[in-house]
Length: 197
Image (tube, rainbow, N blue to C red; front, side, top):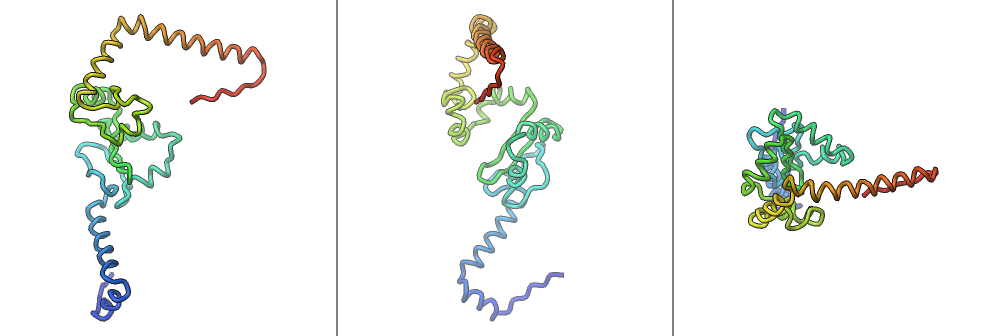
C-alpha cells in the first residue's frame, strides 16, 4: 500500500530548495501523462475502427517500438500491422513525427487519392520531406487546386493509348540498356559490384 503524507515542514523544505518550478513541472508531467496515456505527446487520439497496436507508452506512444524494429524491414512491418487489423488500416503514434495511418486496401487508397482527396491533406511535413523525390507540385505531394491540376495532367498521360505509345516504349528502352550492361559485366568474367541508389 502506498501512503503519501506531507507535513508542512517537509513541503516547505522542498519549496525552499527547488522553488515552485519543480512541483509545477511534476504536476504538468502528471497532467500530460493523464492526457497522453496511450500515445505520443502532441499526437491525435485513437481513431475508432482503426487498428492501434498495443504496447504504447505514455508520452512516447510507439516511438520505442519503431526504434527497436529499425528501418531494414519497414515495409514488411507495416504490412504486418495492416494485416493484424480487421479492415487493412493501422495507426501509429510516434514522438516528434506525429500520427501515421497505414493502408493496405486498394479501395482505401483510391478513396484518399481520388474520391475524398479534399479530406486528406498531405500537409507541410509530408511535402517538405517528399517534395524533392516526388516533385513539389506532383500528384503524390500537392493538395487542393495544384493536386487537381496534376491529377488531370496525369490522367491524360497515363491513358491506355499513351501508355502503349510512350511509357511502354521508354520502359523497354531502359530495360534493354540494363540488360546490355549486365551482359557486358558477365562476359568479362570478373566480379563486379553494382551500387543501386
